[in-house]
Image 1 (tube, rainbow, N blue to C red):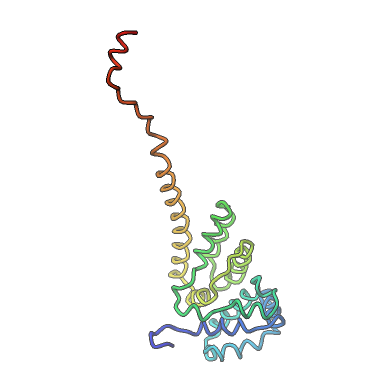
Image 2 (cartoon, rainbow, N blue to C red):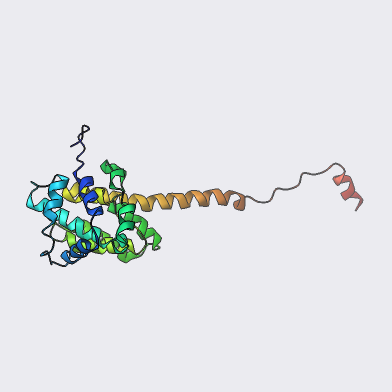
Length: 216
């Protein structure tokens, strides 16, 4: 813990993941399909990041995060590039990174509000701990199609306390993003419409117009 009381273990765990090379990352990806025989070395990551005495369900969550992390496009780049791009130390507090709900909202808008994306997000919100791996893998894979990457520290923190509060926060972030876009569109429309709606001004009568009209 830091002096401010913020649990820094999620950031330390992600920092350990950022140091992994291609072989271990491939093992982690396979572990998402149920093959966990090759990831016994995760125990050393738990110890180094402060989770050595964590409960079994917490280690299950950490293993899930590690597998999802290995799915990201950067994991398929050269090892040196991946290490340079990851900067988990920049996320010391949980509020610094976007939630999965916010990212899914941005993705939904980028896809022109594709209904299947919202359905997948709602299915994720309904998932219990047993269903999280399947639905999160779908979400992370879907986000990657539009170059959205989860904030891994924030995701780790949220999943370790998975429950109604986290679900509600993700849902609020998702629909707040949609509401923000609708508000922006309404304001843009309001700014463009006044000039279009007003009739063209009538020229003021000039001196002599009446007299000239009488002469016609």
